[in-house]
View (cartoon, one colour):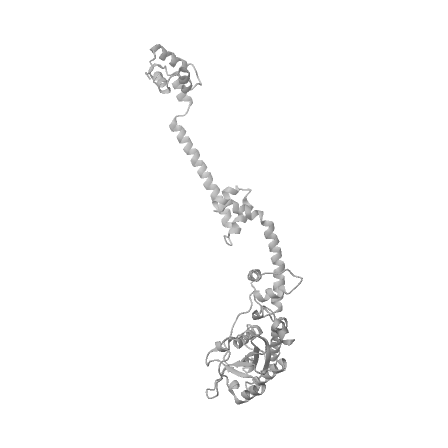
Length: 400
């Protein structure tokens, strides 16, 4: 396409039109004339009087001045943002004096949302706005949960105090769920509330050694093999002697006979000596409870009282088969050892000794009787051993 040519008169008229049209842009005039904008600018440079150019130059800012002003505005905005961030962080530092947790950040945003925008607060504290709004919308649910936890906490504390601090989360849960009027609770929730209340079941253990082995005495085979279970009651028993320290330096002793089926303490005896008569008395109490111990297995360690001829004779008369674990290992009689540890842990707790022999006998006797009828045992699905036997179908079937 051939290039256009314009006369000098056309060019001068075009320049005059532009100069006499204040407020009209050069692009508008060029469009009206049908010429290129650059072409009109070249004509202005050659034929123009400079009237419009001077006006434009003096009335409007240059590109450099425009960019400089914009930079100043940007800097002012940045300074304003930094000042706001500084103010937010100063307030937050006082607010989080006791710990900077996520919930505390949400609370801070909620408390200061009238001073700063939520968007800016979340940006400075590195929070998701959606998380804050979700936290705010579920406030009524949390309030309801706190109230429910407070009520449950009072019930937990009642049970904990009643059991003298011996029950942990699972036993307390079983006790609470046994209340038909209450709503069933989960042991994990009970454990969480106990942690918040700083309640913890007593767990202190004491190492005790009372076995006095006589290598010359006969050794009976191990008929249990660390499997402390039985298909029904009155089949397998374990027994042991543990010492009970008295404040005056003397000792009392407890002999036990425990049924492996239900962990029930079928027989026990308390005395100020550790002679054969002590374990015989416990065995006779077991016979009185069960009616007969014929063909039952009695498992013990290699203590001299259990290997004595007197005790062997008593077992033969009752029709009991003796069983013994290995020498020097408590694991072979772990069930009896566990019972002894639980008794001392829950009766003595932080005390090292009993005040006197009478107090010792009373406290131990009370614990042993409650152990069968009240204390919840994990093996018995958190029922007391006596209750477990009553509810077990095997018991009902054997009794019929």
